[in-house]
Length: 257
Image (cartoon, rainbow, N blue to C red):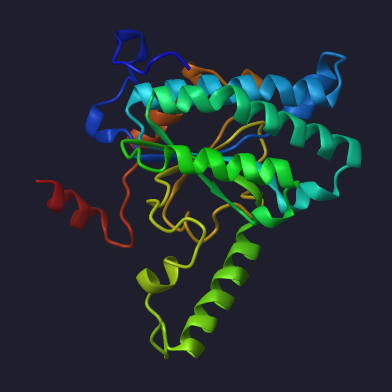
C-alpha cells in the first residue's frame, strides 16, 4: 500500500457526506476465478490477497474509515486440509509483508473470530500485528479469521452470563449497548454497507447482528477481479438509498432539513 493521500483519481464519485464510514466485504469467487483460467485454487487465493491490498488502499483513499474483510470462516475449516494449510501460509505471508505498510499508513488492525484455533505461530503473529497498530485510530482494517456470527454470539452470551454470575454485569434483561460490548466487534461501528462479490446473494454467517441495518450490495465480479470501479458503483448505489432505521421516509427527510 503506497502512502495514503487524497488524489483526484481516487474520487469516490459521490459527496463526502454520503461515503459510508464502514464497509464490510464477503470476498467470494477466488476458486472460480482460478478454475476459469486453468489455475489452482491456491493461485486464486493468492490473487485474492492482492485484491485485498488494492481494495483496502482504494477504500481508505475514498474516505471510508473502517473496512472489514471476511477472510476465513469457521466453516472453511472443513475444506480439504491442503487448501486450509495453504490459506494459513498465505495469511502468514500477508502479515509479514503487509504489516509494515499498515504501520507506515497508521492503519489500525483488528482481528475478529476465535483465534484459539489458529496455528501457534500465526496466532502469535496476528496478536503481535494487532498490538503494533492498536494506537492508530483514523483508519481501521478488520479481518475476520475463523469467524462465524453464530459462534461469536454464543461466545458473547457465555461471557456475559459469566460476568453476571461474578457480579461484573447487571442481571436481568441487557440492553443492546451492554451486550454488544461482549461481541468480537466491540468498539467498532456497525457496517453501513456490506458488499458480496461473485454474484452470490447470502450473508454466510457474517456479521449477522452488526449488519441489522447495513445496506446490502451484491456484485457479479469475482473477488480477484473486484476493482476501484466496482467499489465506486457500490458506493453510488449506497448513496442513492434512503436509510430509515425503522422511521418513515418523511421523518428522515424532515431530519435532514
